[in-house]
Length: 223
Length: 69
Length: 251
Image 1 (tube, chains in turn green, red, yellow):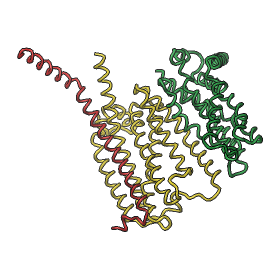
Image 2 (tube, chains in turn yellow, orange, blue; image 1 turned 45 degrees about the vertical axis):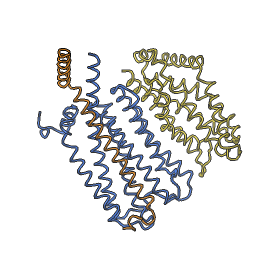
Image 3 (cartoon, helix red, strand yellow; image 1 turned 60 degrees about the vertical axis):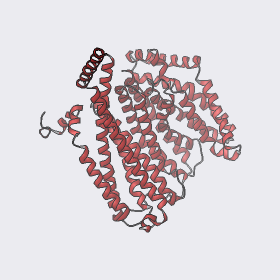
Image 4 (cartoon, chains in turn orange, blue, yellow; image 1 turned 30 degrees about the vertical axis):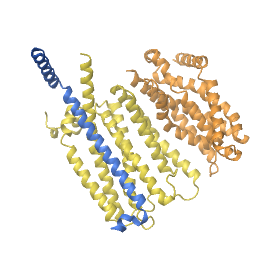
């Protein structure tokens, strides 16, 4: 079973890299969003420094959302998903493998890019380590919870927007804890540490809830 | 009476609040009742007995029209 | 048909699984429920607007509380009904459970919306702004998004059986997340408002205010029940129409 899991993971990674829509393009989108914000709120460096972690997290959310709808759809359309349900790998692990692939090709590149983009927003260098750590811990939650939205709308032709609408409320705790863990503006000292712990808890929970719910949603759509 | 309508100066908030509640709840009722009525109507039109009667009536009407032409 | 009073509670529950049985049983339910609703709300409005005193601090705006708080309660109750019915649909496969969930959603969403609007109208004279990102209002806003997403999913997936299963999964995931979301919003709120926050409802509610509040809350609950039964009946008919139409199309 482990071999099947790794095999599926490698297959999806290769697909994401070859077909595109992963890695490079996600980072590019991330960059564009970060560029657009100062254009909208003005170049005041103090203001940007205050909202930098918030902007970076929101941009991360949006970038994750945009790549979600194709998570299961390609396999659904060509019948591969039906085959996978009949295989010896439980559907929950199939969903987990795809979510991990999504994180590796979308979340991880964005996390690595975030400090550099933080420079554009006048983010203090001292905030870099907590920012990267928070995003490393939180970004898997985006992929795993996001897979639920992708699975629910897999049978819908242009399901991207609906998937985003469904998943965004579940992203709220990740966003809130993630910004504070990254050292975002807050009134209380020690909040950053508490935020990171809460973020970790949410991320761990998503590792379980995500694949279980996504598998249930896939089964609902496949019958 | 005027004092009541005035709501201590907060009339612009209290009355719209009650109004929006009344409007939304009424709209819900109307929509639900209309939906129920519509489904009853559609079902009545589709039930087999109704359909056969309609088809028989149409056939009779067509034959009498052609014979009367 | 066996007399319902001879059956145990579980047997009655399963008897209701038959749509035709449900339709027969609820046929004479709607009007009495509606009548009770009307009486309760009329009594509630009477006490809310006429026969109760203005608040010591908030003045006459406290009367908005009599519609705002019950709306908020019903907004939350609606989601619990939706989630509970979805659980029964997925786990026990009760045939009418998904009908119940689908029917409850718009009613709950409407009350959620009303809670937000009346909350805003209450907040403007109290806090000076139309909207405040406090924990309760923010949580209620996110709850509205959860409702709208659920309704959108039903509307987007065409086949009722498939939509029912997907929607049930969504409702259950939502109900797991609601406490987490609410906690995160409360936590977020305390981080950004070190000063004392004006709490909706203020200090303990006086007895004279409790009566209209409870009457309105009960009235809204019966309103929910009445509309739920009505909408479930319409949904059952809608599915029958669909089946007949498909049969006709196939020849």
